[in-house]
Image 1 (tube, rainbow, N blue to C red):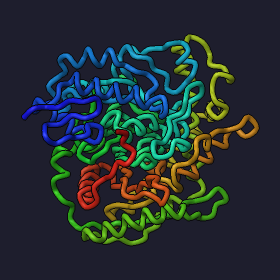
Image 2 (cartoon, rainbow, N blue to C red):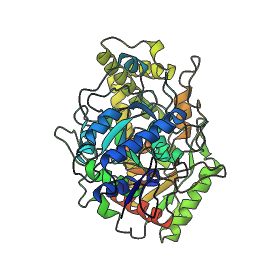
Image 3 (tube, helix red, strand yellow):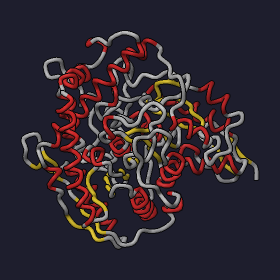
Length: 493
């Protein structure tokens, strides 16, 4: 059967398939069956980025020449010839610019010396890196609006944020620039943009994916890496590629005995699932989520019940402890100070206050005030809280929540002023109170695109599993996707 290749579609005749609507597994199948070459897929991805990126701001560092050169003979892995984007934070692409969202590194033209383990593993699997994506400064706030360059814009409504900090990656996947993209998550930065852009986003368990060779962990284990995807099977396949320890890792998650791609073929047994929609407000009172988010959880609960699962309201009291936010922020602000110091070492000079956002500078200064005992005490508190939280997963298999507490917010929502430098971080805490706790506990969690509000904006729901149980999350996610196939309405034609 003849193959027909056009600027944005690739298909056997007589059927036309819009390439931008396919997931990464389907892209790889086109290469495997000879319907497309790696160079063709790369060229189409580049054409789509060039067509839409000025409007959307998803890609900040193009690596087109490198991708075309690699497309000549990519490794014969499961994703041979499939284009991918890498978030410009933490993971490094050897020889490519790296900024972490910091304008001083961008202006200096700083470049990474080598591929991180994650990027090297993706390359061995056959992925072709076509560029790097937009992120907030040091990934601090849940958007992708770094200073000095255009923001990433939500493809469902370009006046709104993509969420973040992996917002550029989510925007690119939602519009079909690439079928999946790298993302990381220190307080929700995989799940939040997945929710805002209508994608699937899985945060793995602590220690599941190595940070080699540059780090043992990030911020005491708060941060995790994986991808944002159009399908559950893509997330499972990439986790198969990346999961497992590397030499020198300080710890690793429990070994997975079967491949994750095999797990999603097995429907889960009837599960006990608790759900909640309230979070602790700044005044110490419990606050209900936005009505759209309530409706998203109610819809997911009904869908789960129709699949044979027992669903009931369940609060986790430890998450309502007012000590939670200051303990988490104690760890986080020390990490910001460390990140600024590390960037300064790469520049060979100190970073000045006028070179970064007022929030970033304020958090870094707070981090320098935290004593060693205070930092250790904060982690001890979080560890004890994590044990209390983990007990809930002896009574229930999964916990269902809104991913975020309101629809995708307007651009500029998380900005701070000089007279109120911490406003952005507290606004972020109110927006995403359900995600950050599970960075502290190390539990796996995912955001699923099962609902859109009356304005057509995606509203994700979060499922949280017990530590090490990505297999169960992927199984239930695949079951939900089969019952209600994910619709990617932002795909550009």
